[in-house]
Amino acid sequence: MNKTLITALLPLALSAAPALALDVPGMVAKPSPHSAPETLDRLEAVLQANDVGIALRWDHSAKADGVGIELGPTELLMFGNPALGSHMFTSAQSAGIDLPMKALAWTDAHGQTWLAYNDPQWLADRHGIDDRDDILEKMTNALNNLSNAAIAED
Image (tube, rainbow, N blue to C red):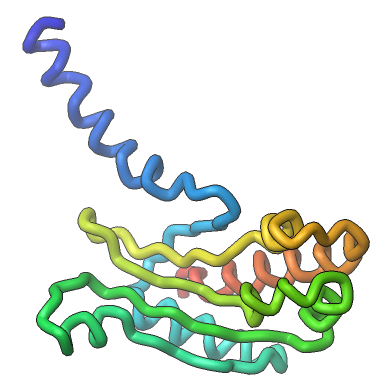
């Protein structure tokens, strides 16, 4: 390949790299125009406004910094709605390893912030849950709407 072609294609390859890194089976990832902490602040607020319980907020970057490891902004929010999640347990109690739900916000090396969570269908497949289609649809729609509200531009 000649040098001119490589030079022309390199920016395209680099711009695609962040998207390729997010191709994680079972994970839904959305770009956010806000910082990682603000993205989770916004998600936490919209969850609370919709009566979804907050179980934990964990700042991975602060914890890493505390042991001398540099990590860009990375925060986790654990949350749940027992009216939906409990139905998953009655089908397969092993789903408790993945529930309550978690959302991760981070800023990548390119400065792009992401909001990600596990796809409820992936959780169902992982635990062999095949009798909760109505619950999966509600969970999927709720997560989509709530995460979209968190990443919306003002």
